[in-house]
Length: 258
Image (cartoon, rainbow, N blue to C red):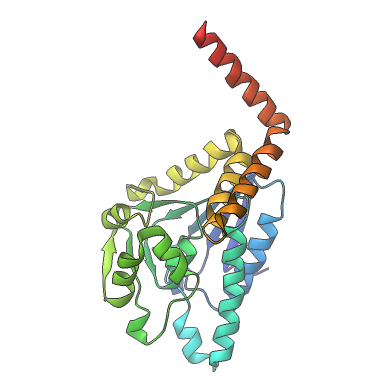
């Protein structure tokens, strides 16, 4: 098994770790195939309640491995094929019912932005930096950046990152909506795990469905979203977990009114 991306389990919690620190966790051809396989493996596993996405070394992800592209003899068709493979993994995670938190301990560049934004909740170090760099080397956005980035920060700010040689710090990323929280560097891992544990310790399946509705809803008609919401809440209402929690809520409400 490849060690470019590590997968570890602790009960319902799955951890996905980018593990090419010597290459700033840049995603090459083999790592892209591994990413796709991991996405399908974890999202189809009913025992997975939440996922942490993190990285080894000083950088979170430098995007695609441009050095490998340049030295491997790859053609444009090869690069397109690799992008499709990674995109399938991104789409599989984003459209799944597994809530994902990213622990961003360092720099994020290029396609790393899209991989980071695969997560639904992003905890970033106060030392993290964020940059595009696509156009600097004559390339265009991939790995979901042209869709996920403007969805997070708005079109104008996305274009500012993509059309200027601009690096933003963690506080700016928080202000823009690129990340969810900023914490001290030493606290990133523990805070990300606390978020994931909150989901697991509560109704993680409901959190996962809420994530799925929001992430997929942006690409469908309002009518389709309403139909999905109606079907989803009805399905959850029939589960034993929801019945117990709804009954407890109703009992507490009745007590407060008496």
